[in-house]
Length: 211
Image (cartoon, rainbow, N blue to C red; front, side, top):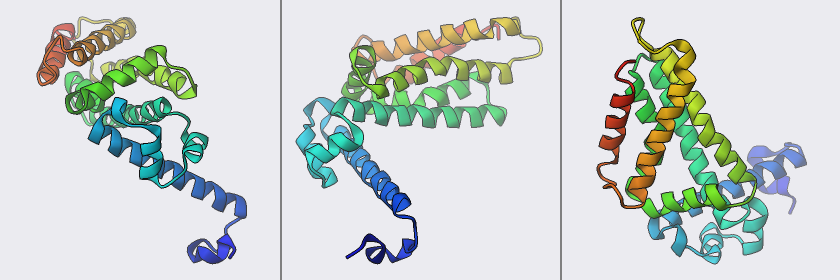
């Protein structure tokens, strides 16, 4: 039976468009299955075979659609970081403080550290030492957080702020580096994961005291 006959809702859709839509659906199913398994068992304890079985595809299909298991983890975390960017920029445009907007920016990452610290550290490991196009995308997103923080600072800077507008990129860099270190410390067990939101808020309060 032809694909157009088995999918009446999209009857008449160009064959190329139908194929691309089905590929996107399969890719999303694989990603969702990986997200569930990483949450249930932890990244290190999930095998490629389990990922394929949960998604209902063969191992070869999994590799063809999303690449390796590390690339899946990076893709999932990249999506969470992007969600944080969207929420933070919306919050800052609504008049939230710089502290609240920056915390919202990092909330998906902090939440992952709280819920699945091993997964968060596996992501850090892949970003630092992994290979593949998604790693490059992750590095771009992480370094791009500084630009987002700078945008938030520009929107929320007080008229009587002692921080010059020209210094906002440097302040954004300091904030991103400090918060990242707080997250890494929690992931390594140097600080309590449960206290991570408090540590981040304290760091932000100190660095933004003249803002």
